[in-house]
Length: 239
Image 1 (cartoon, one colour):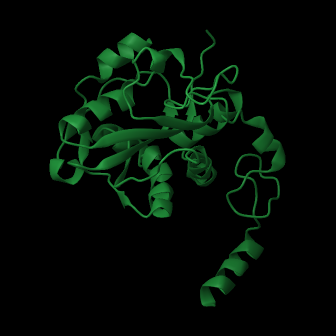
Image 2 (cartoon, one colour):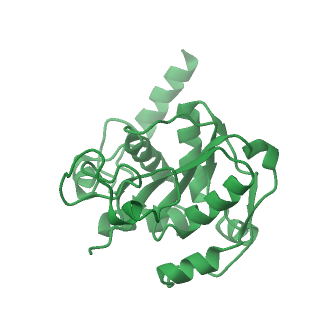
């Protein structure tokens, strides 16, 4: 009763507003209709394994060219939306500008993206940051997204089983260079916590897949049973 009253007082003092544009909304953390409609949400048809949006529906088992060629490493991946103008205007301030309020609707969208897959996990693991970058930024954006997902699933949030060493930012690199640059940056320091476990990796953006692929490699080598992934958005290139 006390908590409910306190919540009502907070809402009276700070009425719910869209975290992107500030327009009035009914619940804290939700998007207004205009902002919601501006995102390019990923829906069917999509690749059943990596979640890549397909141009047309070729059936429930139709895979994208990457997965059909056996070049995708994770068990599966899902992303809530495409990386485009609107999602970029949200992700970059969230990642580099301290707009942590965006985490609430972003993690909700990511849980929506998981609606068609088996979410029987033992561990939810945010992609770790190197210590130097974590000190500079003061928070790991992937952890802010992963925590509510772990809470809803009722599973362990693991933020300390894997360490990451610092490497230069990969924003300007090609896909091949990203895979070369990320090689060897992760190490499993608590193998007993991941051995035999089904793990869901969480990150903000899926670009080339280099980071999740390398993290999956070291986790499987440490004895993980399976490794899947979810991101808020992903780069979709026109081919």
